Length: 291
Ligand SMILES: [Zn+2]
Image (cartoon, rainbow, N blue to C red; front, side, top):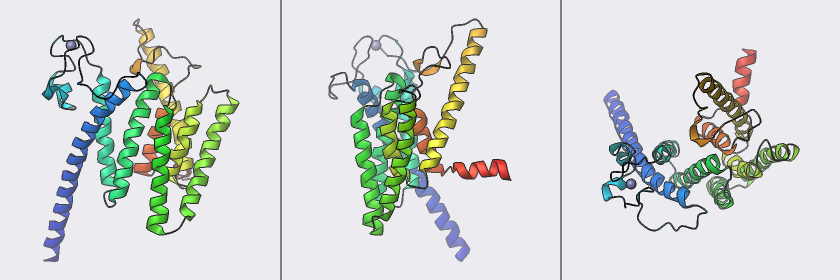
């Protein structure tokens, strides 16, 4: 009997997890397609209202062409009227947001307040990620919103749930230490290694991870940055050798050792890795060197 009941509850747990994931994925894809509009119209003076249309021939998109992810696949990334290509970024943003929403839903499933806060955080991070990649700028209002969300999360987790300010203060101290480190790098390099926007971004991200995660986030962001930079340099060398034009993804153009590379994407990937997978740099190091 007990055995049967266990199997039954495992099956329902698996099913509810699956249903929750599908709902989160669909919701994330819809939010992602809204974020595409936000990213496209951010700082261009265009309003968020108005029907989406093809950028080449201005034909308004039909209703089924507004369905996230599927319409891009169905149209094979082209306008149904003039056949000009839509940027794959639209699809990427929708998919990324959908996956982040699934992770958030599964990770924080037991606490509806945290789910809400982190869905908001993920949406902000998607915009910052793409915007910094394209323009090398982190919009201030997104850092402010992120900071408010992080403060809200800390207040909720510490004061409301645990009834004490102590974890809040620890997290704030840890976040400040991390941000101070980035500030020192920014100051020493005269803004060449990282931008001041990265310094400002590091504080709310650090606050969200708390004292246990800030150090890992900082170190891991440099590992990812170094890894990606070397990979891009190697890609460029390869494509140059094969006689073609140097090819780089994301419209980064040509890259040299001295090129400024947007740092926020590395910081964000590092943040997400530490948040969802509890990557502990110290544990990784001790495993590599002392075992
Ligand atoms: Zn068109």
